[in-house]
Length: 246
Image (cartoon, rainbow, N blue to C red; front, side, top):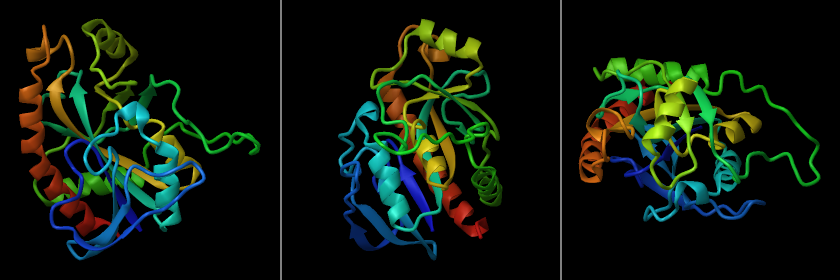
């Protein structure tokens, strides 16, 4: 089964015919919200609001282990993550959509693994952090509905909830990052630990600090407006993904 993890601005996909909500308790506590199980464009799926039903959970406070464990318990094998990011690289302009292929993790003090506190130490291969199957489905779905997406991108994951300084963005660019967000880690790694395919669709809502029209400050009102406009495009791509995914 496919799960969609909704980020900022999406507490439930438009058009989801809800059949039930599942409140799953996990060994790691409660997930961000009950799982919404239903059908979207004729396809059964699970939806989880990453920041909670009222968007009250900050990125560093999300119980990522509970979220991923709950999805696995519900029979999910594939995850499409939706993320809002800032653009660092020149082509990652506000309003664009990208399918990241790599991650650089700058987070700290988050529950990074299921294999601790008495569990045998387990190392996962994380050379390619995003599932090529999910990435291919997103790209094919975007093509099917006529939406342009950037097919690659290095996603820098910062701690949040504050946005970054211009100097920090300079550093991320030197490190090779194209995009900056706050939620792909440890989400992607935890999904890998439980054997779930994980891919992301990132919407660029603003230039990162010190770039473009964010040279001196980030206009948060403009960022939110771009995000709202982009959600319709994200919805079309989700429909395309469901159409091409076997």
